[in-house]
Image (cartoon, rainbow, N blue to C red; front, side, top):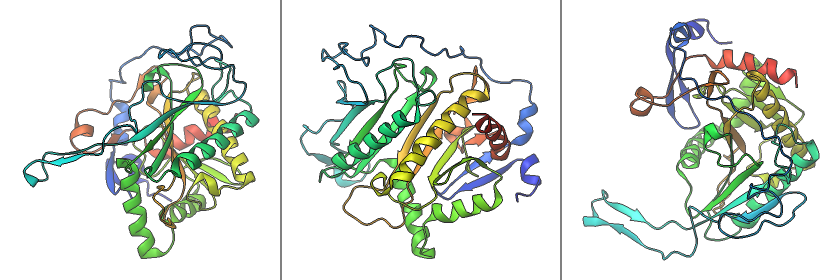
Length: 346
């Protein structure tokens, strides 16, 4: 169990997954200024919105028509950040390693979770969420099989506070030629730990969390959701399968059901924390698709929600957090207690 001094005094916590530190300042919860107030989010009320380009049968901004789909629907992003039809090129001016650039090829797709405009993962039924899980796997398998693709990043931005331009239930899938920064950091940390201990870093970490249960907020037979010991965002969550697998493709049927169930429980619980549709960025981190074996990698998902003290007060990453180290006020243990109560009432 954690020493009480770390629940009351300023300290820093080590993030072994990225090999950096986060500052925790429990005493700051008593300061007078409680954060900037934002507008409270309101959920869409229409099952079908004729102005929504993701609703079945509507025309998208790029001129393409969205078909009358009845389950999930995937399409190439009309305004993709990455494309494959770019020439391969690189530069390193004066060979000094200072002015370097290289082309980056990739594919960006949009995955509509459901045809109904007014749903979210929190309000969808379990069979519908399971279909999303299966589509994530199918997309990861298809894109990851391409020799040019070395990483498939699946993610969802939920709510305008997190930059979601459309409330229709959807996420994105980016397949990239190179492994992005965050998975690269996690890969190095997991490789180092595996080489030293011959077990995956997150397997060992999960065993510790399950034995202590201070930061566990939701659990089923195959998956666990917890506030990581090193959490940066106030109500950040790490979602892990109990069995070590490196990718979605390795999940058996019961584990896919468990993933759908934990996603539903987590998102519904989030909505109960401040009685509002909870914004977040969520992403899955599978192993790279670089044709290598990855016994060090433990599939996981991150939830990064911005809300701090209410439905209208958000956390900003500014000042010291941009220039020094990330910092949080409420302890992960306190956040876990709040989330645990919310998850239990879903």
